[in-house]
Amino acid sequence: MNRQPYQTPPQWWAPQMNPFLVRLFRRRINRTLTYSQKITNIDVQGVEHVQRAIEEGAGILVTPNHSFHYDSYVLIEAAHRVGRPFHFMTAWQVFQMSTTYERWVLQVHGCFSINREANDLQAFKQGVEILRESEHPLAIFPEGDIYHHNDRVKPFRDGAAAIAMSAAKKGPRKIVVVPCALKALYVQDPRPELEALMTRLEEEIHWRPRQGLPLNDRLYKFAAAMLALKEIEYLGRPYGGSVVDRSNRLAVSVLERLEKKHGVAPQVATDQSMISERVKELRRVVIKAIEQEGPSTAGRERLRDDMDDLFFVIQLFSYPGDYVAERPTIERIAETLDKFEEDLFKLDCPGIRGERRVTVRFGEPIVVPAERSGRDAVAQWTDMLETKVQELLDGLNANNQ
Image 1 (cartoon, rainbow, N blue to C red):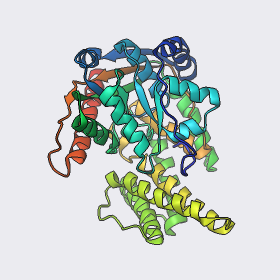
Image 2: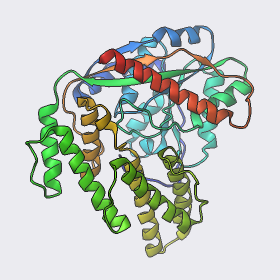
Image 3: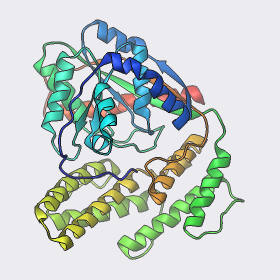
Image 4: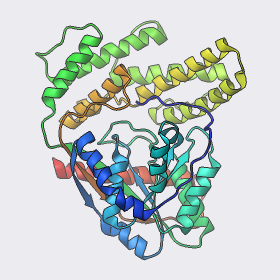
């Protein structure tokens, strides 16, 4: 997981969509994908679904999974093939950590900032306005973070569904949501480089490399060792049981301690689907406390430690313990090792192991009703969109077996 600053954003960045400049940057974007990410082929399927919605004059929300770095660049290329640039809702940290020139490039590509740790009314209104009035579709990654799960979606946040439903209610035109799946596959065998990375990881924790074992067995032994170290740090001793149960127990324990400390109402549910929402609420509270702390260095440092603990919980959340065991493909092994490399060596991006191809599949447009049907309508739509994207991913996986 990427470490990012968490605070009240210093400003809001608005979109400055310029289709001419988007076309002008196309070759540079694709060159970055080729030479930086080794993505040498992009297959875009279901273009006609988006084009039909454009021809009908609908406001279009595209909801892709968010599973690898530079997937937004892939979606930019997909938009070129649709024939209409997309707007992108983008974490404010991306703007904050970019140069002035890079921010300008983001904005002319239709990007605008969102504070994901708060109710960002400005970003919400901008999203609604785009859906109601713009000729350009809006793309939102409802998972929020990049989890490196190219076969599974993590729980969707409800902001995308809420924006679509608000736009549909206000009119004047039809609003549709287009589910979208992105799937990356290796066309070059990355195993030699993955073996070398596994050796580096083992040596980093002072283990003798277990080069005689299958790569997925080495990965799980390493994961168990790392989990035991964190259990000792947070719980006082290592625990038994499956990796899934141990990881969930550790995450819930950290969250319960922080919720008690900061007076946040504890959540009854302990399943993983609630973890990201609990982290979001705690981050909001801790950020406010940091900003109210004033010059007290000791107090601020303790709160910074709390933010580090919340980052650790999201790291745990990003590792579904059964992901590789369920289907030990080279992609799932590589994605998990990518995460370990990012987390252990504190990198912005993992290394790229081999040449890859990406498939983008747009699903059938789903018309958003103008009137909500009950209090849980946003939650129901969020769950439905998550299911639709997962179904598209499952279809891509079935085609690649």
